[in-house]
Image (cartoon, rainbow over all chains, first blue to last red; front, side, top):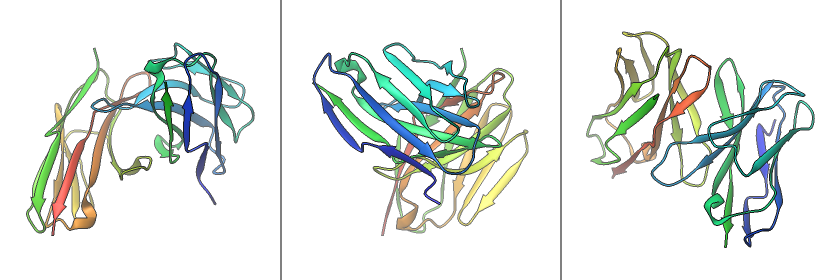
Length: 110
Length: 109
């Protein structure tokens, strides 16, 4: 039982490049989330998916897209990376409002 | 605007020195108050959920309490392994979590 896994762990991009962050959970949870965490700020919700086939915007969705591929997988795509997207990205799933987090992806955009 | 504020930003204690972390919130229709622990380089790990004022929950050296305006995380006789960043979050009326910035706790042996 791996819980929530994320790939890659680290990534450096140049401005304008695109990439997809992958997330998978093996706990059979319906809801999944993408957050970003910046120094001195709380976690901010980018997108979430309440169930397979549905996605909704969170607090800071601009510049991102998501895909809920199936119940296990929820990916986050940056179409044209900007330095303001330098952050640590966390994926989470939840059961009865308790969220389980992955180890994070540290992204730097130059 | 819904907001969760944690204080202090950082707290250094000697091993065995008890203290409290504060989480004040202005979240409309609060449906729950959550505490998480985050170790460096890792994702947050769930500790407690509190649903109503007056509620208390304990786990080892940690006890979380809730009033109508704030929550406290009390740490009794802490050990170095309790060093981490502690996050609180309020569950709003739309079932979204509003997160505080965290308190970084350092316990010196």
